[in-house]
Length: 130
Length: 135
Image: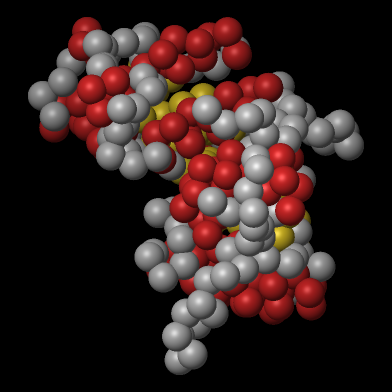
């Protein structure tokens, strides 16, 4: 079965981000496919390169990156939600005259249409709310 | 005001069958951003020419109230977005009748035409859609 995952919660604020990560791993372990993980609202913080949890805590950002690397998972962050919250790649940083970018490797910024596209290509869309 | 973000327009369709979407809004309008996200997702899905309905549950029914004035809070009016839904062919709006009752609200206090459904009818409604997205 083909799944897409929607993540609306920020890591370390809501359990939803970590639950989404664990669910995504479980889906893959069961032999299903992940079409896309879409991060919206506060979920955009899942893609922050500079997030630095304490060493004995789950590093959610690196967890997603490992999935992207090992399973070629498409990690898409809602661009409108990201810009509002200060998560941007180099292109957006330059466009908005910022001195830095902070989007972690493995994530891409794109529009809400990617959520609709994910639903159209998936048998199940599972939302982890905020 | 942000500059225009990168493309929000539909990606070229790699031709997929249509799927029906039910957007469920459960949150009050101005305490968190979920209400806006739900409406934005409904509009985007409609732009992709997919059939979309919206169901207002729980505190989400407050989103439907007439005469919202969030400018006092420094926020944009969400009810304005409700008015444009028919232009995007989003004709079917549903509201939980019990949620209205619990909050002492009636249909005539709402900004747009909605169909009230009881809990048992909502169960049937949800089963009719390919995808349910919750906000």
